[in-house]
Length: 139
Image 1 (cartoon, rainbow, N blue to C red):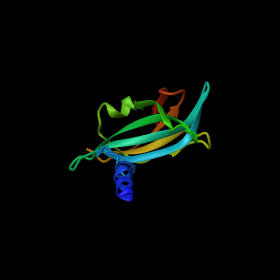
Image 2: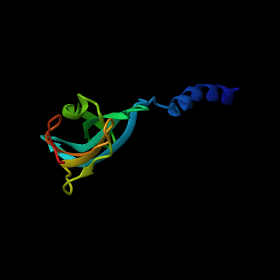
Image 3: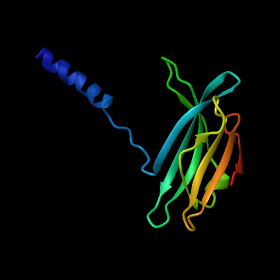
Image 4: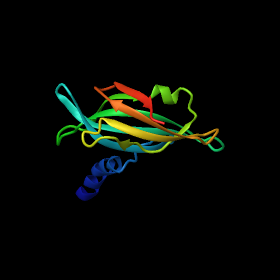
């Protein structure tokens, strides 16, 4: 009887530990890397490509500044922004970004295909303090 009671008490914990977290179905690609520091915070960048489509595959690009976790604390998203110049028209299908410089990788290039005329484009994004970036068309 005691073992049955113990099993019943532990069952909800086992179920919760194995619970699957829902992920946004529009998330197509994720890339994490680089290094940033600002004041007493430091962490990595995470780029998220969302979107989809059938006839005209279109995506949007977001960057997040994620504070490094410790044994006691989970990593935390400090800032999350969309790359407005690229997302406002939403005509591009993005590939994963690539570092332009070595570590700390504060600049990335990203290639994109225009979903309507299939032209190839390359963009450069320089990352600054959390939530701040500069953007330029590279080709």
